Image (cartoon, rainbow, N blue to C red; front, side, top):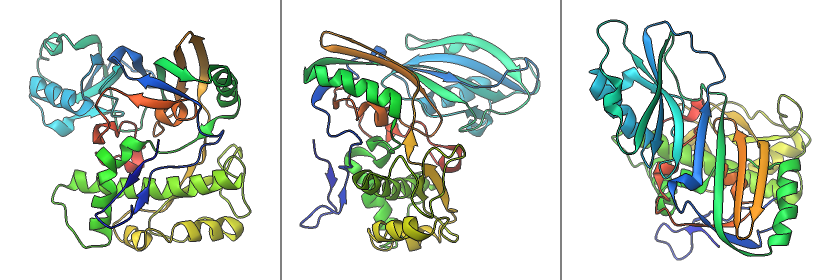
Length: 350
């Protein structure tokens, strides 16, 4: 399935067809048929003290948007929206469990049970000394089912083993680029055409889409070169030295050199003007791992249904894992900017 974005010219400006680590999948499956087919449990990775100025709510939601629920919490608590914290935006067409914090140093707490609806369930209430901030959690655990699989199911079994053993490319998901990839057209309007967006959060989302696109372009080239899961000369390796990294572009001198720098300079020259503009909008240059290793990966294939479970760190996408397994027929109707779910703290501009 090909993806491209046109800005009105005779040919598409941006391709969203990036290389596969193990070749294009030979099966297709129905994705997100119901919210229960995409389950996410947030793991904070730290203990809540039970004391402090911030109330913490553990909530299960079904088919609801994280930001919308945060506003409902603020309204019930009688506080400003920015007094409510959460670690990450979780998928809407899913069943998710995550934490919210509310700055509530004194006064009588509301009845938090009033948040409960047919789609929202309160699991736990406690307190902690600090606000919950974006990217502060340790991981997310996913349980995902694909239905009505068609194609080479015997080959799928081998691919599951490969993904578990060797990991997948750490792509930003298609949902990062908005409905039909429109965030890229908007990013170009800001970066190259001098356009303005009054909404600061929306503007930040477009700039993040541009950085993500450039990263994906570099990663795709390195997959084709066979260097995505190793290091190039002059590369910046991950802390464990397991693989190289790709650019999140911004101001500052390039963090790579030699062969790696030459490759990135060539790839990042298109779209023209993006890198120069990103250096002048207040973003600093950073690096992101090219390799994503899902942890606790377990799969079960029964008939035409596949269930996989795995954990991922903040800022990474479950769809990066799924795209190596199957062509996804997403029937949720939610292939838009609501998919900006797990942005790392330094890029969390939603």
